[in-house]
Length: 281
Ligand code: NAI
Image (cartoon, rainbow, N blue to C red; front, side):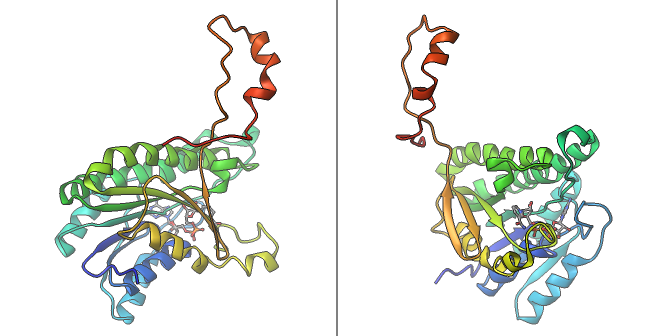
């Protein structure tokens, strides 16, 4: 059985939805928690006490947790959160970058300020938190970091140019950190969930949402937080099913140094044939 006894975890955006479920299960399995959440609305506006409520839930089940209301976009507040964790628990073993907001609009109508806000929370938020815990994990020679990507980033979704760009950016961040963290046993993975939360309310028929409870994502994330976790994996999870997503490439087609645009056009079907596609590494 996977245990987190003696380990400390920070889960961002853990005041509700998926993050709350992750925090509760990590605590149930013995981790000491920093429950971070700004406590705002689904579009990121406002603030509240959602983190405190989850800390109370963890305390009620006999676990140990502290609340943190920092916005992941606020570098100084993120640094203070890491200091708070170190002062309280002396180490940080796990970071789940989960905080997120939505500002959906078709690209034609998208305000750049709304694009910036989404990039700031998802991509820069994860960047800030990861950068702040990185020296601790590298020094400890142990760490587990989970990025939260999305099918919208991996495959695209109408009205989510801002969100999709941020979510695929997190895969890029993971790809490099898996290399830089390898020698010191810092493993970095990504979860791509589909779950019924306030973020997806009304986006799918209720019958479908009923099968997609956030608790079904928890086993995947808890595995990625465990000592046995892989590194560099994109784990897709929805309603109790799991799958690995990967960047694939078709076998290289040699057209030679003199190849012209017309040669590329003529060979397009061969170049784009994914029948024997492979991933690298
Ligand atoms: P949610 O809205 O219930 O949870 C997001 C949490 O992040 C909220 O509690 C919110 O207060 C917090 N948050 C927002 N901005 C913050 C900030 N600047 N600093 C700290 N906390 C902040 O939504 P859900 O579905 O639980 O989302 C969790 C993560 O999963 C997000 O990154 C989301 O993009 C991702 N995701 C969710 C999917 C789904 O089907 N629900 C699909 C793919 C990805």
